[in-house]
Length: 493
Image 1 (cartoon, rainbow, N blue to C red):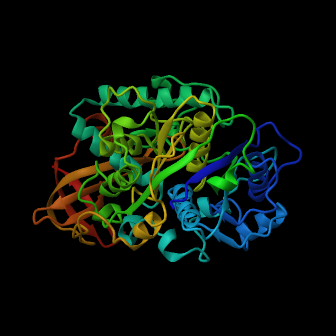
Image 2: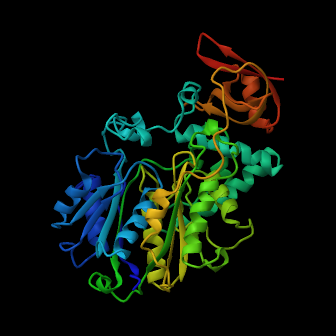
Image 3: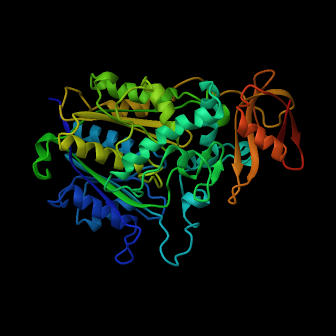
């Protein structure tokens, strides 16, 4: 007999900016969110899974959380690094429950990044320092050595490359394209303003978001500060998954049941930016979402709402494209307001998205919806479908099938470390200093024989202006290695 998986409880907590006493660390926020999710107590929960915290280091966060809650679970685990982790943990927990290995599993995560009073800047945490040696080597590397040497190592450097490529694909001029992106992000801002747990509650206009100002400096073209994820937030969330017979034990109030219908996960074979054949698509994102839909026998047209992972506008645009959602589709693309306005520190954002969707279904405001989640530069993806109708899916093998599958998509694009000769720009960004002035420009392109290269342009203000004024994708460059810096230099032709 198929065992249905119910999201029996969910909770979110926000440690307010004005709060000065009883300040909690991430473990404390996880415990508080867990108590909201299961008000009858968690003493008898079978499993505890934790999204790896990035603002604090714990010897064993899952075991420590269980101890804080007075629980003695039979199974504990901490996720790996990546924004896909919350949904990936739900997929795994659902499989364990469907197979009868466990009857109830708590999933929790939290971060504490907001500076208070005279507190020093939290530059000693893994998220700001780069990941410590104790982290798994595979998870802590987001870029190749040659990319890092050219100044592309963090999401703030890499995701603008996707946006510039999307801009070129649109055929719009700079003003029209930025206004389109701004309108999308303004809607996300309005959603966050209405969410009780959002870190920012003041909606912004499209112009306030996309055009630089004293409060909104340029980070890396075309992204201003308000187009980047909001990291410095104190947020926690928790979910309680259970088999259908056990779910009633934790069910809160009169809200209706919420079922986990199916999940999917996939990883790109083209892991690094320098290996990608396209900067406007993601085969793994499409695969993860389509697997989830196929497994619960739903079509994309059957879904009422979405929370597409929203670290940057490009991730939403690519997610919408991979799911086949038209620009005019009226269904919500975010339920929280996204990482830029709700808040998205570390790996845990999507746990808030799932909790928000479950709340909407439990209240009867929605009958179903999908959450997508991603890690690093659109490298690894997870998706989940939730609903009030249990459907008839067998969840017992899905997580194992996904774990056993090889990475999806084409093989890595061949690339060269030292580039010489004529090339063509595929995408680029101009990285700005903290004072808002352009600092350097990074170009990704192809040489005549098809090899990918990464290069910087000369530090010429006129070049920076030209790159930001009109889209230069497709323009010819002449590339040469610079032995003094170990970087390639690309001169516009």
